[in-house]
Length: 217
Image 1 (tube, rainbow, N blue to C red):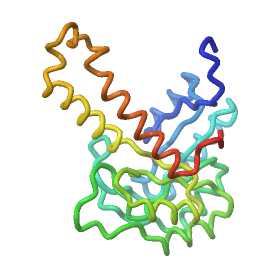
Image 2: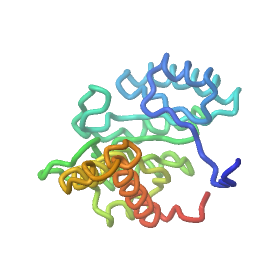
Image 3: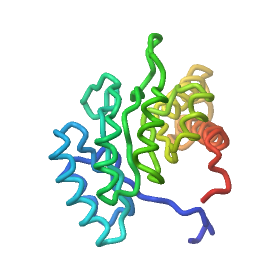
Image 4: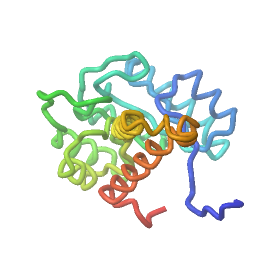
């Protein structure tokens, strides 16, 4: 408030467990993701339904997931499976606010032999779930044209983390390799971490421009 920041911000739990999601709701987060994708669909539906009722009673938005996302996330390694559109509809019909569905995307760096996003499946998921905003996890490293096509097929939220981490590491390495941490009080963490901080800001701005997010808050 003191900085007159008017852009709305959500305090969001990413890939929350069943118990973690409930604790987050109790803690007063404004948005929560319950990731039940590793459960059989019946159990995913049952648990998601309970989380939706609990969260919505407190005005908290809910993101749910169907189909494992590839790569490593919190120690769980997926192979980039694609979600079943029929199962996506079952989860969407529970009254969730956002749906994350696997369409060949993975967390972390994409391997050289990555097959790309499965737009045929994404189209079917979009058709099955109607106006449900879809979420694309593992957004780092996906070619711009694929990102744009995914947005045209209902993707409304894209998670980007690895690219931000990589530019932060590069900028921090450059600062140290140039010996700037040895000049004056360049070893001060606020100075040491500043180049990486600025690099993340540039990366985020580029993503906002690509995603069409600017002026949409």
